[in-house]
Length: 184
Image 1 (cartoon, rainbow, N blue to C red):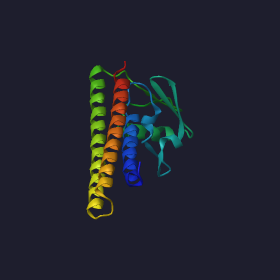
Image 2: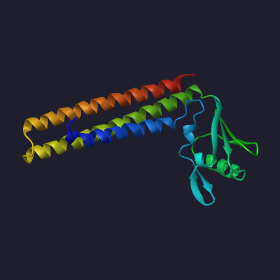
Image 3: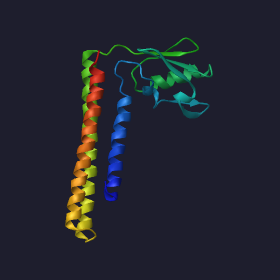
Image 4: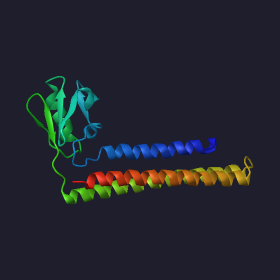
């Protein structure tokens, strides 16, 4: 890759990373502690990530247990989970909080798969926009006489190859997540 395309490749990489982080938050019927990553708890007046106020474990495939380090945090953690959009009601025994993941219905699996596909399409649009920005930049540079027309064409070809590479990566990520969701 040339240094002129490096910044565009970096942006494409960030788009792919962002999509993969989004996919971690989509639950596929199994307990995944990463769905709690975006939840913050009011810890003495400060919004604090859930992982910093208790121990999170997955003792069984369909259950997450949160053991707060301070007993008074049980109610706060429960409140934060209820306020989030993960769609699971927490239960507590006074010391620990349990999140039991129900089996996904076929209809819900199809909805989630459709959402995954839509997020993948959105990421592809972002990749194509980055390509467009790069090509426009190369055309301006060529027009200004900073690079030759041949160099401009080579850079455009390089941008297209980068675009194809990242779109393939997005397709793979979408396919993998869809298979994970549809597996009973």
